[in-house]
Length: 255
Image 1 (cartoon, rainbow, N blue to C red):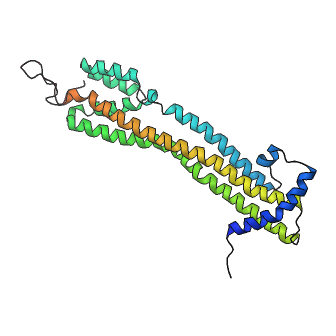
Image 2 (image 1 turned 180 degrees about the vertical axis):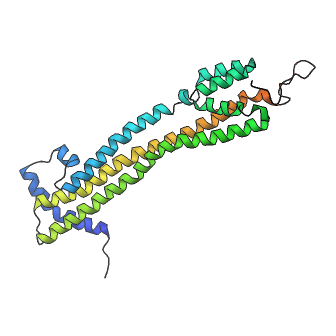
Image 3 (image 1 turned 90 degrees about the vertical axis):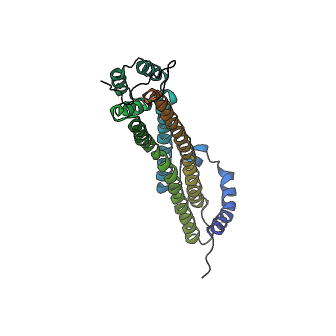
């Protein structure tokens, strides 16, 4: 038995529905609300409003993520200036306490590095990498919800499309090829509108997900570079004054 592509089936349904739509248009016009936010079928209404709810939640969550992952939040300039002064003055314990109280990404990197100061400069560099990887993973985890929404919503829309086409073909069969305009229009509307809302939800969610992920990657790399610059004085042979070598201890005691 030869299988008919779904595009042919949609074409058949639309061709059969055109005369019905023309006759229906003479009697009344469909409002924008009825076209995009309503359906003649309960399942269609449920799918449409589920996607609308997902859209609202996705937009709100996207705004929250944008606010949480700003540069001023992850790499605050004020913290950078204060801790630089403390390290230059060799107030290591004060710098550790100050970084422990700050919730920013930069503070966590520096706190992890200073915590390994007694184990040498190499241990401090490894601590930056380990803390950086852990914190980056932690920051990326919440935005995965946008990725999930962006991938699931088209599937929900496709479910509505398939359901609407099945209903349309059932109407054609039940009416012997001369379907009632209202019944056929409701089924086709369900098929198309659910696809529309699935894409409306998915496109912004995936776009925001990509933007925020790239932003987090860039800021996390920048934060690691800033932290490495802050701990550079701890490196043996980092500074020289006049003719004699004036080097900070490779493992300064933060106490």
